[in-house]
Length: 459
Image 1: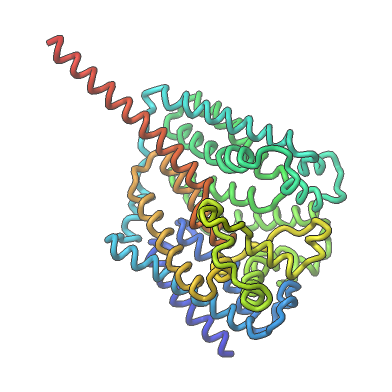
Image 2 (image 1 turned 135 degrees about the vertical axis):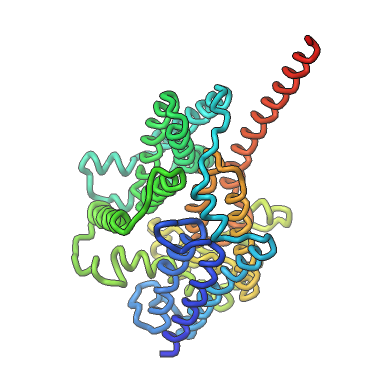
């Protein structure tokens, strides 16, 4: 009973804080911070943490706990994040003079600016990037021994689960080409092309958007992973909402939820061969268990294992670019937890990593101080990005970068802590587009300067 009272109190405080730092928790006006609250924390973590604390989760991962006390410690740690994360964001907003409700609503209503539409230079650069990303998609498929989506279309329904693992772990090409240019860049380019198509109504942008959209969908489903295509659809909903092409209401929200649920069920049936109705309806298995328990259970295992069975990593799982100077070998905590809890899956090659809420990796490295300072750091970083993007010009590039981070930051929150310290994909994409815009702006300013100077000399 005490756990339920604490849960309700913490949830109430968290809702109040998140509403202040996001500007809106309405499902009709989704944004980066509201998605963090609903997806990363409430649905993926906090519901499951209560079930675990009450010892009614019946989840196979939690059965691996050696010490039952970590049911309550884990619940306390997640409750701490529910309050401290938005509280850190709230302090940043106050220091920056950021009125979330006013500025976010203004951003939604603000029209998308025309950027370089009068010049072909940006289009030609964008076309070159698009060709590179589409070639990267083709490269990814060619370097994958058996492409799971193709095997599914051929009717080869056996061992699709194993094919998914092989596609991810036995890729025979350059991983950076796949991860950056195919998986990360292609969906983002398709969104930018869509915004230019809507804004300029020029045929060249429409013709470029179509193959980019096809490649983005293909790279999202090629390995039969369930989440990439779901999140790409959400990104597309965001971009339509932010450019004024879509207005959400209850009917549309219900339609999206039902469509998403049907898609998830179909993927479970055809990919994982699950056809038992009871497993779909059970809160501890099937898609429901995957949503409310699978993401948070490894956090409890991290707390149970590190400092007990495995010494703290003391920074060993941080990005290699940071620890390489100290001659420390990188090892991810999520991999160690998988090896400790499910050694048989490591031996037979079916086990990967147990990604979970970011505080788990912070704890694995630095104990409870890692949870404290890691939560504050992540909250400050997220709110700074949120404020910066809302205050940047609303042109197609910055808008789509905002949407890209609005989807990928919530995903990373339940993926690990290290990516918030150094994420090469995020840095590359940001520098790439910021560099292109800056380069073209400088060229246009120089051209304008010399043209005006020449005109004055002729007079």
